[in-house]
Amino acid sequence: MADTPNNEQVGEASTPTSQPSFRVTCQSRSLCAAQQLDVIPQIVSPFCPPPTPNPFPYVLLREYTNHTLSSSAPLLPSTGFFIPEMCSIASFSGDLSSMTAPPFILSPVSLTEFPAYWCERPELFAAIADGKTAEERSLLVLKWFISTLKGQYTSRNESMGSEKKPLNPVLGELFYGQWPDKNGRGQTNLIVEQVSHHPPITAYYITNPSKGLALQGHSAQKTSFSGGSIIVKQIGHAVLTVNLADGQKEEYTITFPRLRIDGLWYGSPYIELAETSYIQSSAGWLSTIEYKGKGYFSGKSHTFKALVSPPGSNNTAYTFEGQWHLTSKDLKNGTTFTDVTGEKEEVTVRPVDSQDDWESRKLWYSVAKGIREGDFESASREKSKIENEQRQRRRDEVAAATSWQLRHFKHHESDPVYESLGRLFRANPSVEDVYIFQHNVTHLETLASQ
Image (cartoon, rainbow, N blue to C red; front, side, top):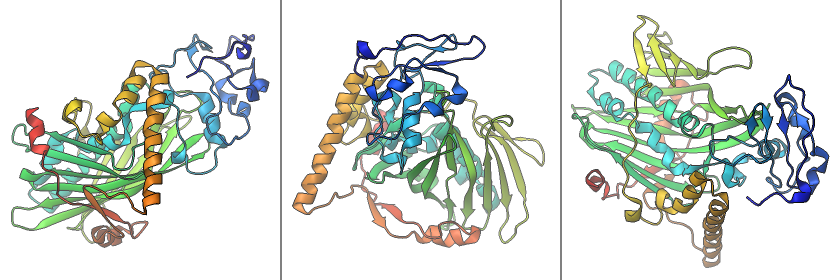
């Protein structure tokens, strides 16, 4: 980030001692009207500048110091979000995922790594195969699914101080990993590929061969701004296949909740899950998961209620309730259902110097290093280099009348498993596409020994 010109530095204005305040520093002459303003958090939005063609035309520095913003605050990843970017979002029309974010609000992790959150508790994933009945396995699938939510949606608040925008993957970006066999749980393998850049779509395949488990899915996000929050509609689904000892198989269609990113104006963004998601078993068992979060005045954060109904019935056989980032219980008997307060297990990956140039941690190494170290000038330079190379690659493909070929997945316009199981709970949409894994990865078995 460039230094602020001296002639645009802002002097301090008197601030009422009874209210926390924002001191605003402008780096754009178009914001001269906002100079020397102290505004309390509740009335920040009126000071947003008018829309501009560039979604990030200016920068305001934000840092709480004794309830006051310092104009010389360090731009460290733990500092939090920045008010001007929120003003930009509020005035932006369209899908927010198309916006290019400056390095100081970025996470040092690519979105391609996010499917690893599905298995940060690999023992729960493996335990699904140990269920003796369709009913028991359905409960184990639900327990595993709820246990994945903390990693997917709150872990960055814990590690970075607030939610950050992940690095936007390039088309063809790859991520490989595994969780080695421990205590007979079997080895779990992960293959991820960025199968689309506009819109960004990530396909993944997670398998534990010794347990007969395979999860195949893809995800995309459509984002918008509403009522002071970012609303994220998650597009896509996952299908879990369980190969049974008798040669039969069960399949589970898993849909995703919507996300609401709150806390923007206060510089500490966090994710709340919203609305409802479903897990439908081919044996007929259905888990309906309702999400609620902390309201402005009341309520607990990250709460859910899961209703489990048997085949062919609308009656509820089990009800589980709690906070998905902490614990939950069975309302029938009060016993603990999920507890994710213990340690998680990070995915094992190859050393960066042994990775393919398209693998996430090697591709984004210099960008991530700059973000973690607070060297945003270096991060911005390296990020622009990658993005410009990708733009040139797309131009070359157009000129040559060719298109990018996926490495590990093949796209199909519809998923018959999703459509079949979706009819049982009236899935919306009723039809979705699918990315089928081609089973052409051979090096994962070597990861555990490195």
